[in-house]
Length: 419
Image (cartoon, rainbow, N blue to C red; front, side, top):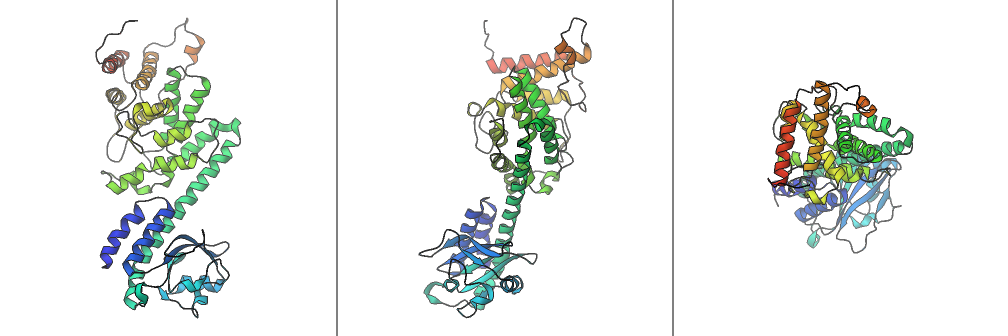
């Protein structure tokens, strides 16, 4: 098989699956088929203690669940500095591999160190080729041409997993001190958005809006706190997304969109390791980009397949995005955002939740026009504004009333309901 054909097959395998075990298995299959190897295994390098640990294997009658080769300094030096794939024999095995692991080095006939920027990432070990043919210089070169792509994929997986683990550890620390939940999560939310100037403050505002919408829906105080926390954490998976995607002025390429959209799945994996006092946070993190008609992601769920907290954060997230600049468009005015949000219900967003947001906007607009009267309740006088202070409330109560009327007409499809 020509090198270009192998790379064409290898590319989707390395970029299309986020699970390291599946990626390694697929890459190993492509390489073995290309060079006609009857057996092989992929190993990743672990620095402390130094060892090679298997992540995929194929073609062996018996193979440990995780095969390991403990490495001495001389082995690490050889794997780091050898110029490329090497044929190995019983006599040469000791140059690269120890004999103290749970697998025999004599099973292999070729070793290709996997390195990124000169740093050892792992190794590709291959057994006999079909019909006992040798590993020729041409075949070794072909393996050497493929090795950097495999090394980079393993390296990226390990970086992503390390980042996810650190993020989850930080969340667990916050979870262990419940009295500081709001302050700690607010600080944590601020760090989620640091990759992009346009995104800064987004998670905090989504938490604010989600809590306000929940209040308008008449839920309990505990549920309002849950919605604020869910809003703060809804985009936590963004910590795994490449920074350059946030500043791209044009439309994302299909592969780039998939990486961006995958923040919901990665975020769900992170928060699922934390025992929150609020049970809906993992679902919100995974499903806040689902849409009522099933056109959202990652699971294409419909409105009746997600919980109310998901619907609330979906509206709050969309609302703040409309009011914020993005590299590919300018922010909308409050009136434009409210009108667009209203028209997205109930086909894309939940009508009841959008109505609750409009109620809060009506209260803000009313407070601007008419300050609290002497007979207003204490709750009316102390009510915090729904909108973020940086957003000008330049919309009139009659305009909002018209939007609510049109929204109700679409929800009821013009039917008259009698009370």
